[in-house]
Length: 233
Image 1 (cartoon, rainbow, N blue to C red):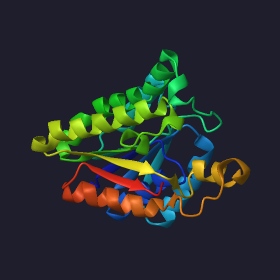
Image 2: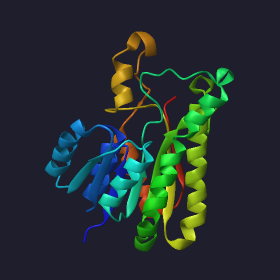
Image 3: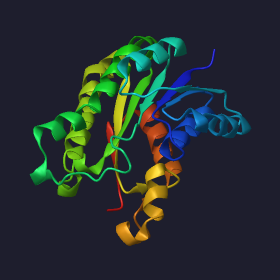
Image 4: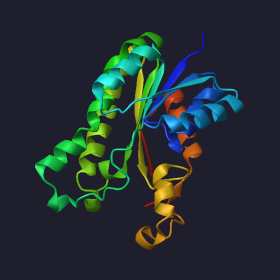
């Protein structure tokens, strides 16, 4: 039986690159995202590359829906968790102006990661697999304009690193991809590129998701580091 990689929060950028990278290694791939209308295209692209895949629609912040979806997926070997922690049309409130409500809303994006890990960890432990997370550069570099999103990034990063410390001697890897830049082919890239009058020129500020996915694979295989920082900012 082939191992299974679960990609939570899949999009056309990094999520699909991770799916393809693990698929090339013989993993069956399971995709979860909110937008079911995209799934046919994702599955067709993976099938064309010889990757067996399934897709499920679920909002990660709807815990009941998420848990039900995970129940129907079954055991997995590797989890990649990379949902975007904000609405693309929302402008973050600068850090000096956030309220406790802003902080609570931002940090609530950590809860789905904890829920998914709690659900998949028994099978990941049994199979000696891994847990990979994607977060933002504001976890390691002060970026006041991102406001409460920095709290989310820092919490997710610490969760991943602490999981790695807890699980390393149990044969399970956990690691985080800390990303500073606009990931090509992703939804944020599409939005930013379409509004140069607001966001400026993207030249020199983008990251290739295939390169990040390759590093993610190497981190999982080698297990020699729990974090890699990608920054073009």
